[in-house]
Amino acid sequence: METDKVEGNAEISDSEAATIKIKEKKRNSIADIATLDIKSRLSLDKTEEACNEPHVNGVVQVNGVCDSPQRTADVTDLSPQSETMEASHLNQHEQAETLPTESKDNDIQYVSYMSELQMPDIMKLIQKDLSEPYSIYTYRYFIHNWPKLCFLAMHGDECVGAIVCKLDIHRKVIKRGYIAMLAVDVKFRKRKIGSNLVRRAIQAMVKDDADEVVLETEITNRPALRLYENLGFVRDKRLFRYYLNGVDALRLKLWLR
Image 1 (tube, one colour):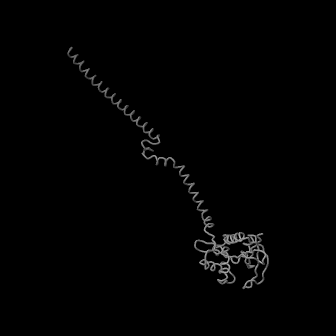
Image 2: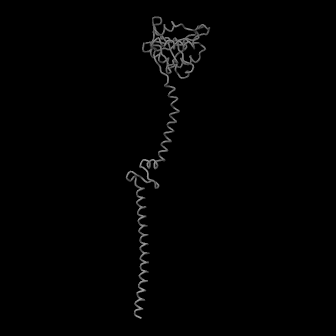
């Protein structure tokens, strides 16, 4: 009986031992799971810290994707940059609107008469608008004697405006300037080219001690009358049937002294 009890006790102890082993395995598995959970949490914390850092070893992680610091800056600054780009686009648009006006004012260059090579362009331009033809000798009389009082408006290589003047002593008393010819290409009118040419001629006369400036224009040429009167000229005399076509002329005068 004792043997049976011992064997029974041994059997019981074996079963208890097996139960203890099973419990230990469960505990170990639970411990392993807990360890894995802790490790995973630690790895997640490290990942979040890495995401919060501006860059780690030259690499940044954004939304789980590794990227360079420069691209990250581009992504994070997208809204301000888009606003800046939009503003720059608006500025470019405004500049595009203002550029035509600026180029329209700056594409005309005013130059003094330089040589006989410019004579054909001057004659071609002026003859379009004159009511009576001038010979080349008339042009040469004015331009060769007073080259400093001849100015051209150039659009690139094209002559689009010209003024021809002279300055001499009138009645042995006063120094009188005379505007003999003024013409502007029809495609370039209403841009104050004529006014600018007259101003340059008057300034050159003032430097040469002119006392007054005179000119004649057709009484029917209202644009020319308006141009000169806006510059200070006044109507001095009416010349009846002055031109070959029978039209009267108005003599305009500007007193400089």
